Image 1 (cartoon, rainbow, N blue to C red):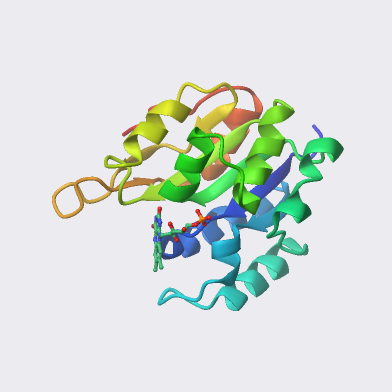
Image 2: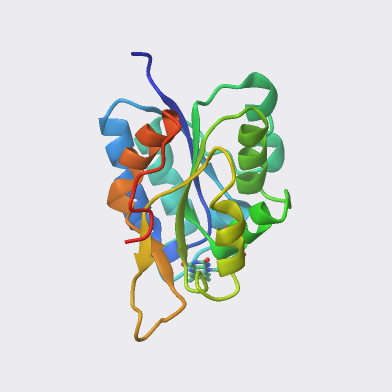
Length: 190
Ligand SMILES: Cc1cc2nc3c(=O)[nH]c(=O)nc-3n(C[C@H](O)[C@H](O)[C@H](O)COP(=O)(O)O)c2cc1C
């Protein structure tokens, strides 16, 4: 079997970066060739969860590749067709809603648009505290879209954060493998 080439893009759910990096490590350990990407916000923003430059350095060291973080850097994914599966992990409510509405103004949305236009599967690892709020309609719009797959997700704290949804980052690899075969891992909502 040929090595699966995966585009792996982090967007600005900073509190889930460490879980995302564990998922990235698992993909690398399983032998996938990973092309790292970050949304502009993820690439540049320091938060209480860590400094942007430290995350970038860690990801570049893990993958051995430069992190792509601009629309022009990811645009060749369309014409050059060099990835087999595109992963947004974590995916913010912001990026989810842009995708649902055909907005392409970040590296993350551009990489996704470039993938979908070539029929390349897109895997969304959602983490947003408005998943059952304002972003719920975007989730509903994207769920039935061809070639879009979700890492299984759940309410992470239904009592204190009733509209929050977070995926199970330990299922990223499994979802990528299933997506490469045109299948959604179930149950998608657990
Ligand atoms: C500390 C911090 C944590 C955040 N966590 C989340 C999150 O978990 N999920 C989310 O959807 N947005 C979160 N946001 C908001 C996004 O970063 C914001 O919507 C941003 O515009 C996302 O841009 P992007 O989707 O292009 O990366 C957080 C912002 C900050 C400053």
